[in-house]
Amino acid sequence: MRLFVLLASSVSLLIAPTVFAQKAKSRGDSAALIARGRYLVSGVGMCGDCHSPRNEKGEISEAQWLQGAVLTFKPTVPMPVWAEKAPKIAGLPEWEKDAAIRFLMTGIAYNELPARPPMPQYRFNQQDAEAIVAYLKSLAPAK
View 1: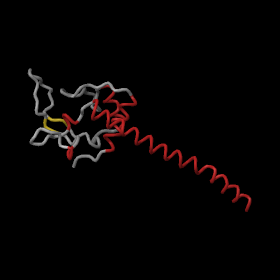
View 2 (view 1 turned 90 degrees about the vertical axis):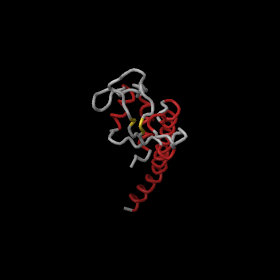
View 3 (view 1 turned 120 degrees about the vertical axis):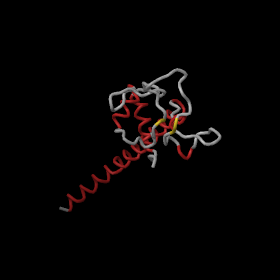
View 4 (view 1 turned 30 degrees about the vertical axis):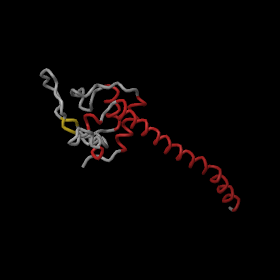
């Protein structure tokens, strides 16, 4: 019995660093994924331009980042499906992870319809779409 306890303790001491290293790596990978998503949302997709309200000076309200906004611009020709407001995307309320990734890769939403203009039909690759979703899911949803 003592031999069994000694052997079990030795094995757990050998395995523990590997388990903790994997968890730390996972947290590091997650942080890197979220940082990549932040870059894509802010610098590439420019999502805040439509999905964030603006203050009286016309500047994006950082306190309401990606909390949805009324669009202040209109098409120059009549367009019946034009969206009058951009939805809240912080926290991705009402979106399942896989549906959001598919939307960013294909432009087709969970309701099988394309995004309404002026939302572009992005064609992000799998890794970028996953990063964007990880970042948006990491944000606190609008109240």
